[in-house]
Length: 59
Image 1 (cartoon, rainbow, N blue to C red):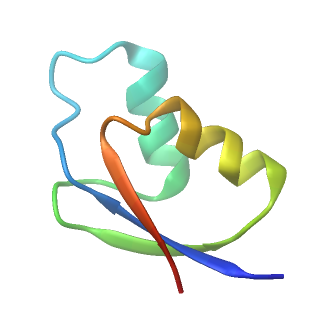
Image 2: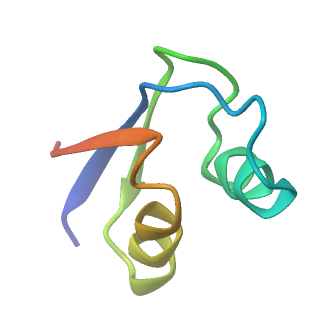
């Protein structure tokens, strides 16, 4: 499968708890941190939930 690179660009402060947990599940702990994941439906669903806090690109 294709890989996708996810980068946190905004803070999780003052965000609902479910969005904070989604960022943790993606492996993001702070602004500027990047992680790579496989493009699976579950990962794409998590990214769409916090799309206002992250940026994505093909890896």
